[in-house]
Image (tube, rainbow, N blue to C red; front, side, top):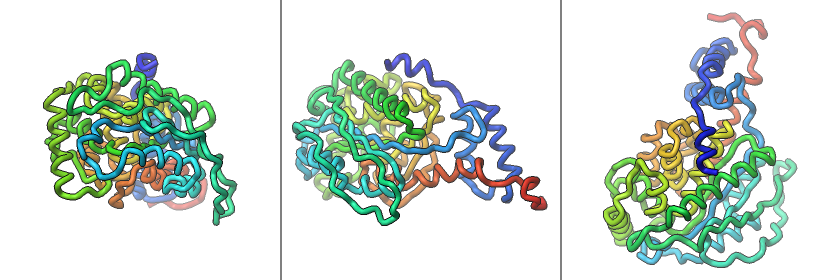
Length: 366
């Protein structure tokens, strides 16, 4: 499945991009007045191979959930059980991601690729009033795609075997195809896993070559002593495994999380299906780097939702050449930043569909 997905990823369509650039020049606005939104809409035309590109509606968020063996190294004060507890919260509609999804009409799917604590049957979501009186999106759903119950401690041994890493990548590919086959026109990344910013920092260091201290942030808000321990853990794991960035599957196996590997597959499937994938925070950026190592042209499908407060996210976005849509100091994960950025992405495409040209509107040009 991974090999077939990689074979389906190609370059952006230059003719469609040229047509979108020409259309922008004829719309009733000064040329370039929408700044980065024009560049984004042109790139999305190249991704779809048509101008204007399809409206990216509806949106689907996939939250990949998994646990981490490196949690044993004291990199976070939060107990590992919180991963499973937050999955329950997602499924009952009580998390921030659910509130933002209701605002945008996006669906929420939770994919268990490696939660260590057994999950109870999906509860019935609570009734929540939508003040906008829009029809509510379907209830969050749980997909079981568990590869193993959390990774191994990457400071002592590889976090995953290569087969496990490939299985997680392919779980992400499957999730993307399922959502797209169900009608989604844009994919939004989400993640949940206590300790996953440690793995994300290790992945970003491996793919960019920056120092672990530059890639490692404070995650959920750790104190100085825990932060120093976290940097040392990342440094120790990388020194033990010396992962080769030219071997993305090997990097994911050595120091990645199951959710990072699944997110990488999710991005790759979106690129192969020629639909945009809106990245959330630092874990999604780490996965984006892995996806780009598998297939450099996959970057054409990636849209950076926001600039995470985690420092590794900025380094990763710079390496990918992506400009974040919003910068609000967010560090929650779950897909929250991607959901806040989603209306901007939709608006960038809608301009090409709905704004009149100078000729059609009878407006004089300069």
